[in-house]
Length: 144
Image 1 (tube, one colour):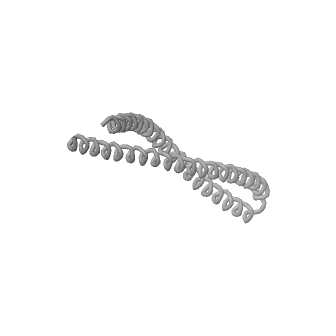
Image 2 (spheres, rainbow, N blue to C red; image 1 turned 135 degrees about the horizontal axis):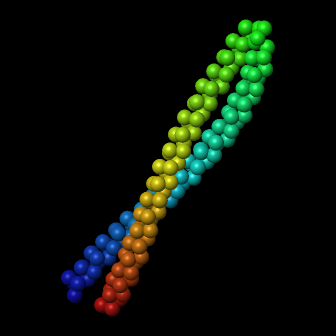
Image 3 (cartoon, rainbow, N blue to C red; image 1 turned 180 degrees about the horizontal axis):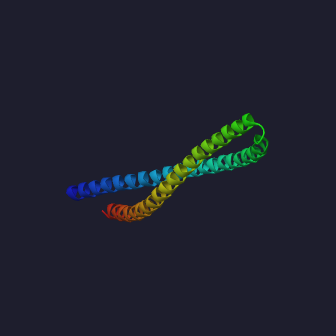
């Protein structure tokens, strides 16, 4: 009688705790998806910035060739062109390094997302199993 009801009540509490934990893991997976979307947006912005810098670099290199043609007679013009090329290369180097970091972060985030997706699938299976046990416990309680 009472002992059985108490055991069933404890089992029901334990199953509710398992259900709450499974719901929390599912929410964590949603948060990881949000972070992954933000990283993808950041990556797209970085790629656009890299394309703009590439166009700037190409324009600067074209200007450098023009200045180098004049530099045969004007040493000062040649110095100015070298400064511009050095700045463009430094800027490109910074952009390339940032792009590599974003790609690495995106790869890590995608791996984390895959891990979270697997964890979410596990959590869903646990949730279904908890739900089945909860239904069975509730049916047993109704039968008493």
